[in-house]
Image (cartoon, rainbow, N blue to C red):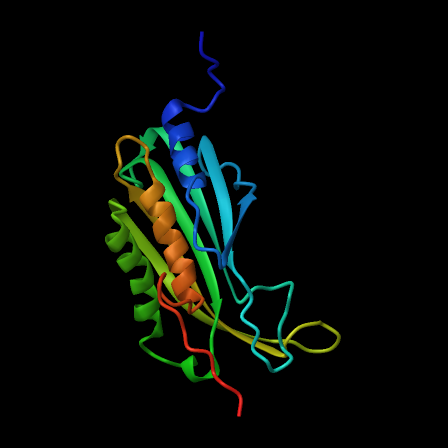
Length: 197
């Protein structure tokens, strides 16, 4: 007799397919404790881009330039607002360059990073919504780290439409979103190193 407290097979399959995705080597994946009480079943992971050393002495090894969280929620009974049994929630934060500050098109471009990744990788979905926010933080006193941080933050959620619970395309799209936000070139494209003179 199955254990009524055990996660349902469809949720286990979804988690397995999300966790099996192996992103490009510049991205570091770590498990996270999923937030409780958002759904009967949940799972979470974090993805960080390797630090891009800015060369100005402001590198912060404790705070990566770009990081993201992906959370899977599952309610076997479904939720009307989700339009399904599953919901994916993501948060991505990336450091901005000074020349990007105040760019009115930045929120539109940042949102396109997500929508294009989902479209390109075949992550079928509905009920997609979210926000893009530019933030600035200035440190004072004895707080360690750079004196000023300017960031873009993307928060989004959507309902995957894969009936078999295979959500690999969504995990791949999320990793692509983090890589794009970090300014990494497309896979297979190499940047030219600057030669010192």
